Structure formats: structure tokens, C-alpha cells
Amino acid sequence: MSRPIVIKNASLYGDTPATLLIEDGVITAVAQDAADVAAPDDAVVIEAEGLVALPGLVDLHTHLREPGREDAETIETGSRAAARGGWTAVHAMANTNPVADTAGVVEQVYSRGQEIGLVDVFPVGAVTVGLKGEHLSEMGAMANSKARVRLFSDDGVCVYDPVIMRRALEYVKAFDGAVVQHAQDLRLTEGSQMHEGVVSAELGLAGWPAVAEESIVARDALLAEHVGSRVHVQHLSTAGSVEIIRWAKARGINVTAEATPHHLLLTDESARTYDPLFKVNPPLRTQADVDALRAAVADGTIDIIATDHAPHASEDKDCEWAAASFGMLGLETALGVIQKVLVDTGAATWRDVARLMSETPARIGLVDDRHGRPLAAGEPANITLVDPNAAWTVDAAQLASRARNTPYGGIELPGRAVATFLRGVPTHLDTQLEGAFA
Image (cartoon, rainbow, N blue to C red; front, side):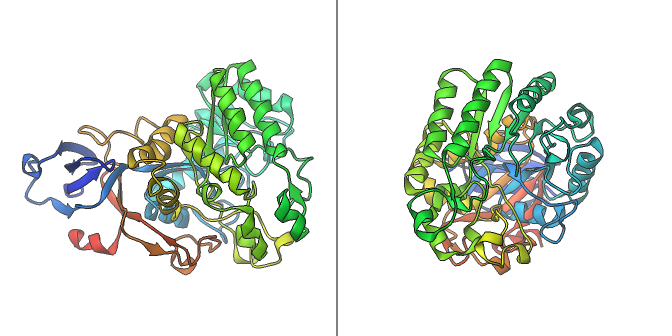
């Protein structure tokens, strides 16, 4: 049994300062006046004045690479990176080796996450066997396994066949699951290297047209409407996709969408360096697309922020652009980027951040019985403390991930998570807070 913890004078959701008492993994008291909290004598006291308290973050889109590519990331190193980034739950994508397309594999991932205990790892099952797009996976068996899979995605590959997509949407209705789509028309992006536009033409790199994403988003929204099922669109990257999602929601279609921090900050201009750290799928788009995504996050068209944390071994990134793998790290930098582009610009509040990065992802992933809960008495003590004034310069060598492929190296971010608690147990403590637990 862990010692009781008092988080004193933290700013709840960036609003009113309050004191929280945590006992046996549960928030047992919340009061604006610390004197009103009857803390046990052996309680650990964290002086949290100036810190923002949020519900523990929930990432709906994480690549942990295990099993099969432990040279890039493991469930342990990815969990550590997640805890340092303020996350208490992550949804692990299915494109592992072997693919997470059976109950056995998802149970292995789930159990390993529980054993490590730094974050709750919820496996995402593959939609199709081997991510090949030909036959549906054992979705029912994964849903009934101890991992209780509710999200299914072939992420990294689009579920391209509309008949397969329809059948998947029909199948998940039985347990209120969702198909999570990587929207990419494979024919329109064959050999593509970056966003199709002025920069790609000047650099002589094969272009990746916006319509390759938008056509699949539109198709899947219509399929979800036809079937009456849930579809979630990953890493929205174009202004056109935003308009389709906006239209679909106005029509009453059960569609949700995510944006990544990198698509909210970086543009295709980064490709001028030919640095593969900026090579990602979908590609970085134009400033106009970035502006449209930010506006869509602000007005609620885009439901959540997800990292698409995609670690790679050094040899897969330390090479020429054309040969490099797509993807970039995101777990440890997401909060800082979101503060920079949304909170500090006035486009969002910290309460919005709680909704975008905790509450709504937990609801979409059907884990909102334990994550994304209010900071209130009787709720699980899954909590993130953010120091909005802890400016830091990203150093790839200092990240907890096994990989080093961050696009933010040398960039200063305005704030970061300084403490993360999973059911009342500290899974990450900044040096300034470690002394309280000595």
C-alpha cells in the first residue's frame, strides 16, 4: 500500500487552485483551502503552486513496436516515454511482428503493459489478417480476450477495399467498437515522398496529393453512415479532410477524428533540409493546412490530439530521404507542442487540453470508466501535473524512448509534465519533485 499523497494548491484544469488528497489509488478529497483536507500524518506533500493539474493523458495512437522491432522501441521504453510525457494510458497499434491480429498477440501486449505498470497499454487489434487488407482478423476473439480490444486499425496501411471496410464496420457494432482508419489511397500515393505542392516540385520529390487522404475520409464517413457504426480517422492532415469531417458531423454520422502535434506545428517547408526526421505519413502539409487543423481543433471538428508516436531504429532514419522510414517520436513532446500552438496562442485553454488529450480519447477508446475521469473525490488518481513555465530545449539523447527520431531536436518548448500518477502511484517525477518522496 502506497503512502497517501497531498497535491497542494495545484491549478485544476488551469483554473482555480485546489488541494487533492490521494489514498489507495483514489482521489479522496478536493478542496480550495488546503486546511480543509484532513491528510494523514504520513502523507507525502507536493507543493504544486504554479502547476496545472490535468486528468492523466490518453493517447489513442502509439507505436510501441513490440513484439518484433524491439531495436526501435519496447513496451517498457515506450511506457517510460509516455509517463514522462504525462500519459497514463496509450493505445498500441497493431503493426508489430507478428501483427496483433489474434487474441494471443493482443493479450501478450496487454499483459506486458500491466507487468511494467507505468501506463495502461491498450492494444489496438488489426482489422485484417497480417494487415494485408484481404480477410478480416479475429476481431471477435480479440474483443472477448482479457485485453478487451475495442479499437481496430491497420494503421500504416489503409483498409483500402470498401467491401472489407464495410464488413469491419458491421462487425464492430456487436461490441460498440470502432474501426480506426489510416486514410490513404494507395494508388494515388504510390512512390510518394512528401506533400504534393510547390515545395515537392522544387525539390524534385514525388508528391503525395491531399485528395489521397480526403477521398478515403469521405468514403469511410459514408460507409459508417450506411452501416450505422463508428469510424475514427487518424492523423487528419489537410484542410479538405477537415471540411469532410465537418460535413459528416453535421449530417449526424458517427465519425471522430484526430490531429497530431506535428501536423499542428510543422509544414512541408521542413523537407527543404532533406532531413528524414521530417518524413512522416501522412506528410507534413502547407501552412494553410496547419491553420485549418488548428481552427478545427479549436471549434471541435477535430475531437482529439494523438501522437502517432513512431519510433525507428537509427539505420531506418540515418539515410537518404527516399530510403528512410516514415514516422517521428511524439510522446514526450506532445504537451509542449500543444501548449505552444494552442494554449499560448489563446486558441485553447488547459481545460480544452484535458478534453482533447484525456477525456475524449478515453471515451472513444471505451476506457472512460478509469481514464479521462474528473479531478474529483471518488475518482481514480490518474493525474498529470504540468509546469507551463518549464521551458526546455528538446535533446534527442535525453529522451526516454529507445529511438531518437524526434523532429524537435534543438527546439525550445514552453512547458512539460513534471509528474504523472497512475492510480496514485508516481510513474514520473521531475527532479524538483523527487525529494518529496525521498
